[in-house]
Image 1 (cartoon, rainbow, N blue to C red):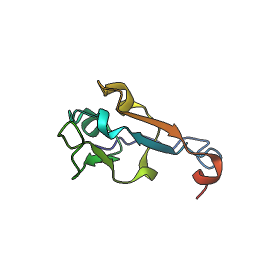
Image 2: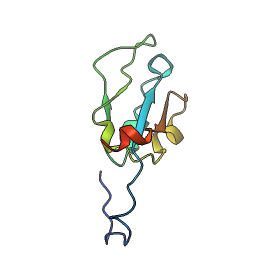
Image 3: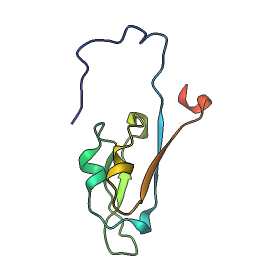
Image 4: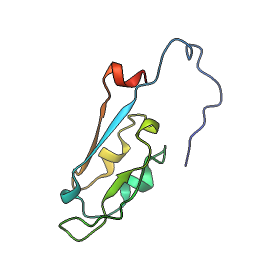
Length: 93
């Protein structure tokens, strides 16, 4: 699910959106899938690996699409995922 804006922001050429870095604590995940379901940029998918709880935690598909919205962090009942802003050097790439 991707959200589209109805118009381009007036300062879009001057302001670069922040880039996120996704951190997953694999063994804390219980495999509910909320982070995958509610990510508006489809950054996550179910992993093929199995953690110590016997479930498949999420994995990052394309971290460059992360917009630091924080939905994954907010909906995770086990605090197994969080995001942080990439530093300025990495974000310019």
